[in-house]
Each structure stands twice: as C-alpha cells, then as structure tokens.
Image (cartoon, rainbow, N blue to C red; front, side, top):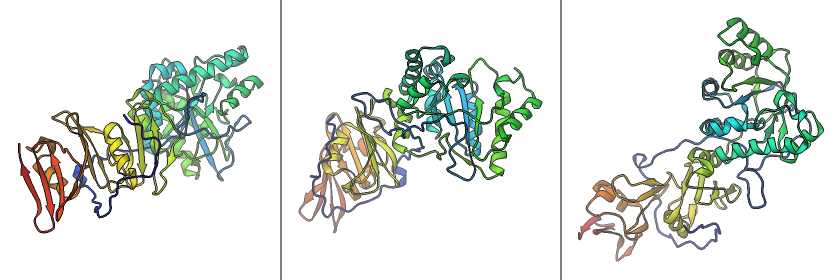
Length: 428
C-alpha cells in the first residue's frame, strides 16, 4: 500500500459536498479501552506511547498524587486458570490493577497479556523465569528484564513501564540501574497478604487473613502485593478475597491507581492496535508515535501495514491499502468523509472491502479499485443491495454532471438532481 505517512495538505476540493452521517445500521461500532505504554526502544523503533521517565527510587508506597490512593498488583501470571477470574472480579467493580507478568507465561498465554491490556490494566515486567536477581551477574539481570519485555512486546506490541524483582530482589544497585535505564519504575509493596502461602484448597479463614493483611496496616498510599500465578499454584483464595479488598478501599474513599500514583490512562489507538493482535496483526510494527490530527480533535498512529485513526465521536479504527490511499487523497479527516467509523470490513459475498466514515464510505474490489460513495446516491445504492445489487461496486467517485451529481458502477450509474432526486441507470 502507499504509506501516506507524509501528510501534505493538498486534498482534492470538496466545496459544496454536504456531509452526511451514515445511518447507524450501516456502521459497526467497535469498543476502545485504555493503556499507557510503549514498545522497546531500538535504533529504528519508535514507541506508540513512551513510558514516562522512571521514578529513581524503589516504591513501597505510591507517590501521594491523591489524598488516599491504592495500587493493586498481581505477580507471576498470566495463568489461564487464575488470571481470567481476577480480571472478571476487577471488571465487576470497575477497578484497574497492575499485572507483573513473567516472560515465560506471557509467551505461553499471549491472549491473556492482550486481555489484561485490553481491559485497561497496566503490565509490569517480573523477569523472564523468576530467578533471585541478587544471585545473578549484571548481564544476566539485564537479560532477564529484556527477555520478559520482549515476550510482552511480542504478545501485545507494548512495553512495560514498571518492574518488580521476584521476591523483592530489586534493591541491589545493578538491578535498579538496569531497570531505570529501561524507563521502568520499580514497584515494591507496603502490604503483603502472603496469599502465596495460602492452602491448596478453599479456606475461608485464610481468605479473611488475606483481606486483613491487604488492608492493614492502614496507609494513605499502599501498594498491595497479590498473585494470579504461577499456573501450578492454587490462587482461588486470593480470588475469593479480592472483592472484599476492593470494597474495603472503596468504602474509605481510595482512588485506585498504578504504582506511580497515576490513574489508568486511555490510549484508544494503542488499545485497538492491541485488540487487533499487535505486531502479529496485519498492521505489523508501529512506525511513529501517536500523533494529534492537526486541524480537528483526534489522533493517529501509523504502522507497517496501515494506520489507526481516533476521534471522540468515532473511536479508534484501522484503515489500510487502497481505501486508505483514496481517503488520504481526499484530505484525510478534513475531507467530507471525516474520520473512519469502522475498521476495514470484507464485503460478505464477493471479493472486496469497505470502511464507513462519518460522512460516507469507501468501497474497494480488485476489479474496480477504491471509490467513495456518500449522500443520497449511497442511500439508493444501499437500498438496492450494495455491491450485491445489479449495479455491483462503484467504479468512480461521485462527480458533477449538468445540474446534479453522479456515481458510476460496474453495471450502471446513479444520478442525483434537486428536481428528480436519485435515478438508477442499469446498463449490465
């Protein structure tokens, strides 16, 4: 595809074209969520969202960004048995947390890494294989970090902004320097419920102990250590206690934040990219940082295989190939089409694809190329059955005729005039 990454401002004129919003039945709405991360830095890689500068101290409590705030954290996952249950509880309460994942488990369960991020949680680096870092050389410590980051990135296209050494083995100078050099903030904890020592069966009394230790001692800015892995360990007692832990902090007015004391940010573009499959998707690797659209409120990110555009009214949607090229020629989001309102969608019965936009659509097929269609002509073509009608796909953009407008199709054309409205001419 033509990349379109140089956004020169020389669109075709669209004077006199009336913007029309497609009927809601014509648009597939896709949900977007949140994440605040970037990809591993290399000489040629540019992050989607850079991690903020790391906090150069080990956090056993969050910074006092609120009068009272708490960071819930989960170590040693993701686990296909336990992590989905933890995520379900968090979702039921509308709460977000930070998951310190092991690289080996991220490699085994990339779908869970994507789900964690897709549901708005933060990902932290907990090393590749869970060694005691104090027993390793500095190069081995760095390798543990980089391998885990690589596994997280392979799963999601995102870079962890937090680090925690197994068993708290992050107090040595070399570990700290290596983590900070990678813009990872080191998160220790203030409250250890010792859920890792829970019985290997349901124990209501130990669940009470987990809740008590997670909420006491009382701090204004606690970091709570919990576990959703490893998969072979029994974590049901943690899951059964989690709701009461959340309710305890909620009842006292705590804000739930990440370990750096920040509420969980929203990057719909990074979120949608992850939901599509990250670097393993058709979009491939990121090429530029998320960038604001220059003239109207919105943002975009470019990738090897296409782009994702976001606006408050449409959410985040991917666009690529000839459809993207035509939209760029028309003037991107400043054209009469506006922002994409759907992803690229295959046409259901014949070979082709389309994107809907705020003010119309672009349809593509191998035989016709990409062409825009909008307004009354689009409405008439839709009534006939779109590309499955006798007219087939559009073969031209809409253009001026004497006294009106016209779009050509494979087997005819549709005209519009103020006096006659739309008129269908079949030639096939």
